[in-house]
Length: 311
Image (cartoon, rainbow, N blue to C red; front, top):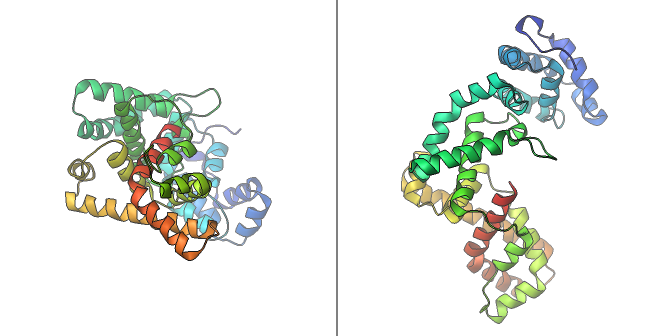
């Protein structure tokens, strides 16, 4: 590992390009080799983060490797690098390493916003104190077999928005209370109906359960972070449209439209996946899809709870 970076020891664009190509997997390196912008883009990111990296004692090699984790190939990889938030990434790396200066700066930058977000959910001081502690543990506590959550920040979006999402998820879990860990597959299966479900729903549960689970999981992954957060807050956290409007600083009508669009996208994606998975007659398939539509709200709530507990 190289020594910590300082503003006066910045690497040249040519040297950064050479080191990047040496560190990348062979296939990705070959695809990116013709990209003339690779070196200048990396150099700009190093320049933008130089003072931050120096304060938090982040080595040049560690920072370069963190940047390169976002590279997937020619063109797209360079475009992704160009959009990264270099200073935010350096701060997150410092926090992940437990650097006291980084942790203090994190609190200074985001502490007030985190408290404000929590206050919109529950203004009681006791809840806010407990939730803030839960968030800090979630972000900075190193588990036995995994890095702290802050280490998963990639720099592809502003750190402040990412922190707010983590804060809201921790708050939802806290308000809901600890529940037994139940596999996502079981939550999806239970979400398909009650003990008194009719024969049609029992048929889905018995014959098409695995296909529905797979389709629904795939559909959830097609949603944006904002759509998932809205659905979590509304279906799992019980937040009203008015509360969500205050949280996102938009009118309640806008929240209602966002929720409708998110649910419709989820439904359509689930139906699309089921069409590709189920080998049944068209008429039977349409009956199944209509039942899926009628049960979506129940399934959505249980599935999102499962995702919350694993996040």
